[in-house]
Length: 436
Image (cartoon, rainbow, N blue to C red; front, top):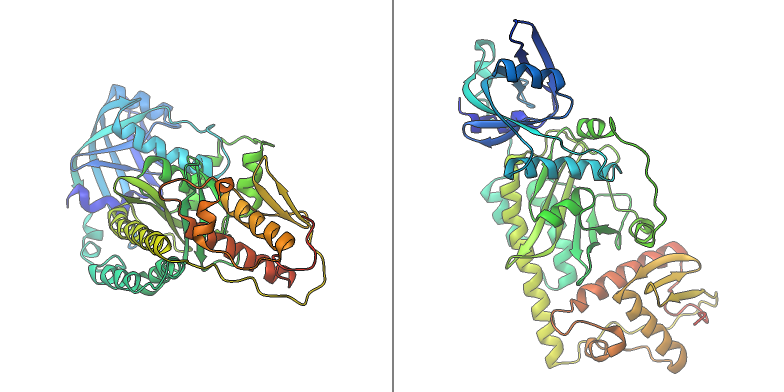
C-alpha cells in the first residue's frame, strides 16, 4: 500500500496513535488529532502537547503511527523515522493556516499558535492481515467527472446573474448531493466577503459578512487555498482546549455579526474553496455536512476545479451585464405603489455608510448608499423608476471606474429588502412616510 493511498486516514475522524520509545526502552503512546500528508515519503504532525514524544524521538527516532480509515475503520501502521522539527517553511505554514482557521472559527483570536511541526520519513506502510480484505472495498464517491459535467451544464443554463447565484448552490445539491452551502463574494476593494446566497439552512444569512483572515472562510480567502475538514467537532474540541475568552466592541465586529452567517450547529465536516479567476479572488464557496466522512483533503483539488468554473461564470455574466448596461437603459424593477400606511423609521449613518430600519440593521456600504438614494428621490420627487446607468453616473455612490459589480450589489439589496419585507409584512421602500 502506498502512502498517498492513506490520505483519508489522516483526517482525524478517529484519532491516530503515535508510539515512541525512550533510549532506555520505556514506551510512550500519544493520541494525535491529525496526520498531515507532505509527499509520497513523508508525513508531519503538529508539535502541540508532544513534550514526552519529542524527548523520545530525539533519543530514538524510530516510531510507529496507527491511522484508521474513517469508512471501514481499517487500521494501517506507518513505520517511520523522525527526520526533523520545523518552525518555518511550506509544511509549517500549511499546517499553521489550518490550525489558525479552526482557532479563529471558535473565537480563539490567535491564542492557539503552532509551535513546531515534526516531520517523519515513512519507511513502510503495513496493513495488518485482519484488515487486508477491507482495503479494496469500493465506496460511493460524489466527486466524479460525470457529476462535475452535470453541475457545469446547470451553470451554463443560467439566464441572469441572480439566476446563476441560485444555480451554483442548486448544482451542488443536484449533482453532488451537498444540501448545505454558502456563496460569498468579495465586497469591492474591502477586506471582507459578503454572503450573496445560501441553501439548506433555516437561517437565510444574505448580507452576512466575513472578514478576510477570520474563520475557515476568511482563511481560505486570505490564502487562496482550499480547506477540507473531517471530524470537525474533534478539531473544535482540540482548539478549545487552550481557548480563553475574548471580547471586542469595535464597529467591524458589530457589522460582521449583525447578520448571522448560516451554519449547521452540528456540522461534522466542511469544505471551503476560494473562487479565483485570472489569479484574483472573486469569492468563497463553502459546503457543510452533518456527515463527518463527507469531505477529505483529497477532495480539495476537485472542488477547486468546480470553483474555478464558478468564478469564471460569475465574471463572464457580470461583464455581459455591464456591456448591456452601457448600450441600453437596464432598468431596476420599478417601485410598486403601496396601500400600507404604517410608518417605518429609516436611519442612514454616513460615517459607517449603513442603514437601519426601525432600529434594526439592514445593510451597509454601496448597497446602503444606493437604497438611500432611491429613498430620497422617491420621498422628494416621487420617482419610482431608476436605471443602472443612472446609478453608475452618480458620483456620490463612489462606484469604481472598472468592474463595479453593481448588479451583484443590487441583487444583495433586493434580497435583504425582501427578507425584511417578509419579516415586517411591509415594503420598506414605500411603506408610509419614511423618516428621511
